Amino acid sequence: MTIKDSTSSAMGSAPFLGIGQMPIETGIALQKELLDAYEKAGCAWLARVKTEVELWTELAAKLAAVHSVPEAVEAYTKSVAQQMQMAAEDGQRLLHDCQEITQRITKAVSNGQLSRQSGST
Image (cartoon, rainbow, N blue to C red; front, side, top):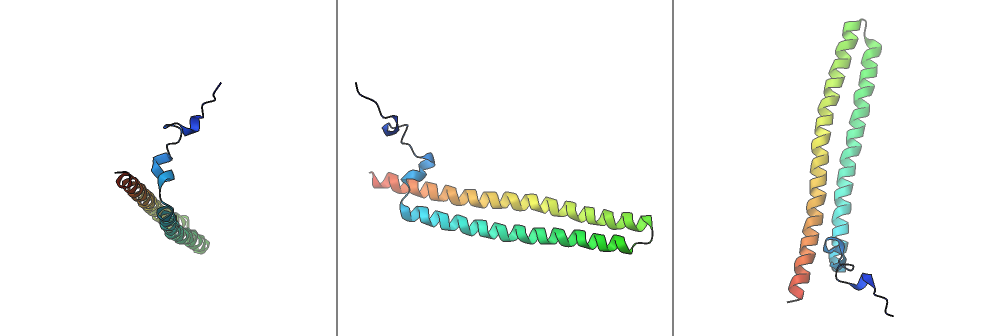
C-alpha cells in the first residue's frame, strides 16, 4: 500500500502567488522595499498623531480662556472641522500607502514569475 504525499502534487506545492519560487535576492530586495515603505508610512502616521494631539491641546487651552458659551462653541466647531479635514486626509494617505505596498509586492511577484518562466524555456 502506497501513501500518496499530497504536498508533492502540482496543486499542493504551488506557492502562494509565486512567492515561493522567487529567487533569494529578489525576496530580500522585496523585504527591504517593504520595510522602507512601512517606515515611511509609520513616520507619516506618527506625525499625524502629533498633529492630532496638538489640535486637541489647543482646543483645551482655548476652552479654558473663553468667557461665553458662544466662544466655546466656536472654538469647538473650528477644532472639529479641522479634525474632520484631517480624517479625510488620513483616508487618502491610507489608500496611498496601501497602493504603494501592493504595487511593490505585485512588481516583485511579477518579476519573480517572469524570471522563473524565462528560465524554464
